[in-house]
Image (cartoon, rainbow, N blue to C red; front, side):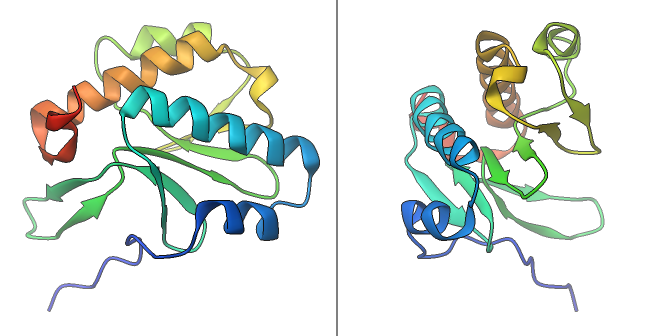
Length: 147
């Protein structure tokens, strides 16, 4: 039997999560700024996914193994040490954008930044929009109605 996906949409209010979870005032301000930006870029209101991810929109994925589920199209988590930005798809268009993004670390599936002032917001927007387009083309996606 396939394992259930731990990251699912919840009913927790995003502002309640930020106000109770994020202790650093700059990180709190950056979180609200990211919400404003990602809402505008995606066309979706923020929703909590799992206990700590703020996601925008959703898409359905299915792997060759048969594992499938739903995930936010783009999102972030204001973790203690740094932000985890779930905004990147490795496309030909997005790879060169990383060179212009600013100060970050790359994980397997996300970009880590300490604060928004460390990165170029215009480049982040291009990365997010490239990812939204990629997901729209390759997955069953709610973003089709918002493009």
